Length: 269
Image (cartoon, rainbow, N blue to C red):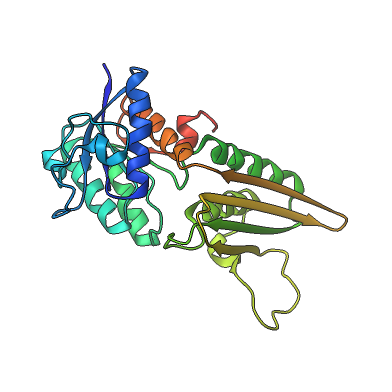
């Protein structure tokens, strides 16, 4: 039976791309796009979801609450505050949830993940297959190169992105720090200015670029004396993230309550 998918935050850019990915999965018989949800009071309420998303009329009216939606799995790429409320609702009603929201503070993240105690929850800062493969490559590079290199992470996104560094960049830093036995909260350096002194090899540097319509670019450099290794991922379309999220939702529908991530979905662990 096809998995019924609901997409919240449908008024945003990612919500509409998720609709395209859900429609593709529906054509393959893996899923059914069953609900499009926007914030209460939105002017989009009642409009045809397919028409709004630019994928053709599908007779699915946009609603403004989870209570009005019929679904097995909710896909949420919204804001930390909205996601916390949606995760709590899903946990209380036995609905699985896929979360791609970024910008959580540590307390919010812990609260969000706690919903996985009661329902299947898949959280990832990036749902693209390529980025999650990069996480594995970063583990290998950090393990082999050890403490003999300086590590810098540079990320670039469009002008509308509201959090920095990106969740993906932070996840890359966490993967490297965990592999090296470091605490990222203590070794991360977010930008440099003025007389900073010589670089501490234990640190992991982050630099952020914002502008234009850049979908997402991340480069991690391992810099040694005489050579440099770079691992780079560039996204040219949000469909890379959306297809991964839909794939995760279909996978999650068959799992028991628990906390999962995209590397679980791809069997990369």
